[in-house]
Amino acid sequence: MSDTTDSKSTIIPFPDFEALKKDVEKLYTELSMLFLERDTLMFIECRSIKMLYMLEVGGLEYKSYELECQIRRQKRKVELIQAKKNRQEIVILSQIDKALDTEFVEYNDKIDEKVKDMTASLNLRRVGKILSKEEVTELKTLYRSIAKSLHPDLHPEVSDAQIKLFNLAICAYQRGDLASLQTIEAMVGDKTIPTDSPDAMVSLVKEKKRLIKLLQTVNDDIAAIKNEFPYTMKEFINSHDQIEAKKKELQEKNDNLTDVLEGLNKKIAEMLR
Image (cartoon, rainbow, N blue to C red; front, top):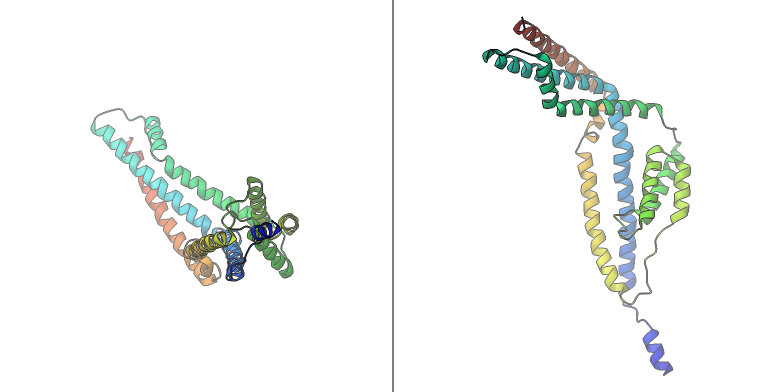
């Protein structure tokens, strides 16, 4: 009877179990490093690049877009006024402007977005404690440890409370809030891979496949970030000559757009006489 009980309670280890376990642990570590790289690109580096870009040329680009929108609107107004005149109808500017407000709502929304971007860049420039090299290293180490334990992509089974905790870690990382990350990291710690389940080998095989697929996804994310704005402006914001050339180009463009807009305004005034 005791022999039967012993044989049922004894789990015979698979020869490749430890090797597979090490592979999965290695993938967890590699992914946590990639999450750190991706999130640093998104939340720190790209944010900083965008801020510097907006502060250097964002104002001129905003002015260009605003002028282009005004020109489109005034050209459309010319068309509507001419259509009224062709039909020998009374031109009521308030009605035309109301129609144009509806027609150009998308452009107005985009202008508002550009204003928000500029405001955010100005605010970002004013805020934030400058960390030492040692503090930056600790910040990244803590964030990587938290990501390894709580990142929803790495651990789909995490609870809503843990997801909220991880989101707090993201916010703290963005702010460079070392104290908050230290607190969060102390609350979580590394997850351990279970070894006492009879079907642990099957689970590890599935987990390894999932992590390999996730590894490719995160690598693709990093490649995409590096090939899109604002990261593609990294070289630009570090080049005084490129910045000055861009400013000159935009100023000339805005001067030309201003001339076009003034011409349209004069034409509208003449049409209404």
